[in-house]
Image (tube, rainbow, N blue to C red; front, side):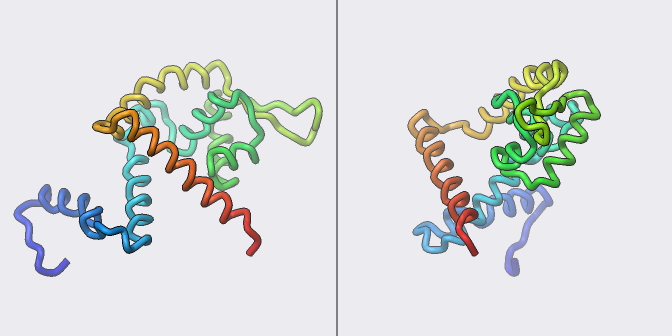
Length: 174
């Protein structure tokens, strides 16, 4: 960024975190800029300070996602967790192994299909989830601060649409 000068590291950090924003493409003529901004937001959301408790609970982001997913689904096979949480099978496998070792996830064979292994949260996993919910809610409140209910509804609709677009593109044959 030639030509830019700054007086302090803090000013530099603030300049870079706000770099490449809507003001850089106000007419949305560059779809790549919108994609870049979404990727940047996703990264910022995953930063540990957004969910302060994840480190205290010895969870990484993938493990957190699986705990939340299982808390809502009740039970699921690993391949289902891959699909619902949009995680790579290797990431799910590693997260499940670590959560099992910590006593937070249990595995049992499906009585109807003996090859299928069903994952559920243990009592410890359920306790952990209940304990984390207020911290997750605080992180969400910080993220969505200043958005009214209509904006949140629009955001939710847009997220569903974008997720559907990506899922459709992934399902198309190459």
